[in-house]
Each structure stands twice: as structure tokens, then as C-alpha cells.
Figure 1: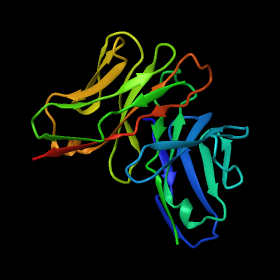
Figure 2 (figure 1 turned 90 degrees about the vertical axis):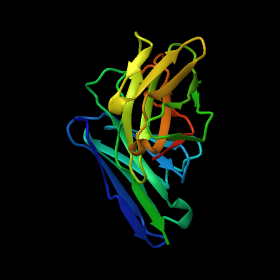
Figure 3 (figure 1 turned 135 degrees about the vertical axis):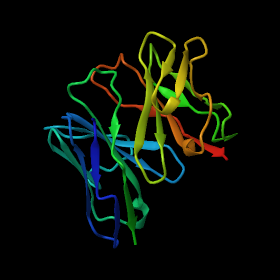
Figure 4 (figure 1 turned 180 degrees about the horizontal axis):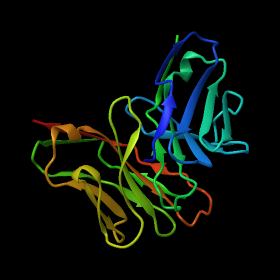
Length: 118
Length: 116
């Protein structure tokens, strides 16, 4: 149980393109999802908290207009990297919290999306 | 504020030997502590957690961790390491006193290499 599917797993596109990444909880409902960015051999950097039916909460230094987050249902959150540039190239990972779980439950992670901007 | 420190960037052990990955934490109250493992180009897999109760927590794949409140540590251990345990390990903490704030703070990660 507790499977999170992230799609696509890898994207290569030209500079200026907008890229959408999907994060789905397959067997549970998630009112809260998280989006992280990870640089090579480094830790996860929390970008934003995605809340179902409301606006995302962005961490300090993360551009809201650059990284658009939509959490329209209890099983889907999307991250859109708008007008992507080479410096946006990174590994993006989402996680989800089961809404029916206790507050001490672990987050469940997707397999990540490798974004490469040429 | 909540934070985690993993003092070792790398840990190298021989297969069959004990494996320890260190983690210390800082929170204002009692912590929720987690260990995750990451394989190349994959997301994080949950290994185990400490919430309350017994200080020795057993998790997946033969891993265990010991919570030590006086030393604010939560070291991950495996009695006999396998080559397949080679991966990147993350310790994470959450402060449960923060109501409706489920954000985790992650350590920098420790790369474990188990040689045959």
C-alpha cells in the first residue's frame, strides 16, 4: 500500500518550455503533498507544500510564478516549471501524506522526475 | 526550529560487517524521527520511524535504529551489511508540537558503500 506515482520520470526539453510534473497517490487520499528539489549528491530541499483545494505554501526563496503548484483533487498534485531554463535542471521529488493516517505517519515518496533543460 | 545532522558523508563497510549510520537531531520537544533510503534516480523509501515507546526500533530489510534522548541521536544500524544496502540514507525529523505542519527536515544524507 501507500504508493505514490510520479510522472514523467525523465524530461529533456528546450529552454523556454514549460514542463508539468504529476504526483498521484494511487491507493490513498492526500490532502497534503510536498515538492522537493534535489541536486546531485545533496539532500532534499523542500520547495512547497501543496494543499488540496487551496493555494500552495512556498518556502522562502522559491519563486511562486516559476513553480506553479496545483492540488485539485485528493490524489493529484502537479508542479509546472514555467519557461524552464538550464538552471532549473534538477531532480524533482514529490511526497504525500495519507489524510486518514495519524500525524506520526511517514511521508510516501514518488520516484522522482529528472528534468534536463537544454 | 527542527534540524538534523548526519556527520558522515560516507560510510564504507565490508559485506557481513555491522553497519552504523549516525544521526543527531534538534527539536524543541519530543521528536518524530524517520530513516529513509534512496537508490540512484529513485525516490525515498521509508525504513523505520521512532514516535514513542521502546528506544530500539526495528524496520525494513533488517535495519534498526536506537533513539537516545540524552544524546539527541537516532543512529541507524544493521548487524550484517549486504552489498545491496549500498545507497544514500537520510535521517529526518518532525516536531509534533507543530499542529498541522507536517514538514520534515532532512539531514544531508550519508552514502553507504558495502564492498563484497
